[in-house]
Amino acid sequence: MGDFLQHVGMTAMCPHSSAVNVSSTNMRVKVMGQPVACLGDIFMVAGCPNSLPTVPPTPQPCLTVQWTTSALRVKIMGRPALLKSSIGLCMGSVPPAPPSIQMTQTRVKGV
Image 1 (cartoon, rainbow, N blue to C red):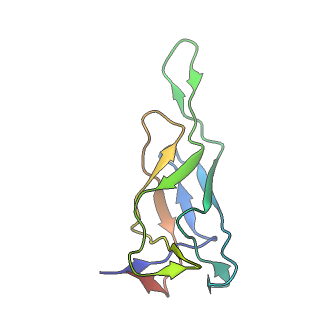
Image 2: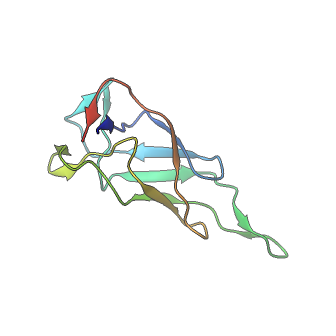
């Protein structure tokens, strides 16, 4: 079954409660007035406080999100669109952990 498409204005968090910001190269397909997120877009994590429990603590913040799954049938400019149910990993932290998507648009679904 399909799920809602991710877009630039979605709210997502790394496992350590820092915001994930989306920068999309897609300027053609929009939902709710904002570009749809695609596989290969840049997902940056802002201000992750994660650190390793050493003495002194070693900073190990989440830096980016790398998506491993995407829509199978929806492509935008030749690239697969990302769904709310897409699986990704926050890279930079040890071990990499999945982000959580808090809110996205609720009008357009993809498969």
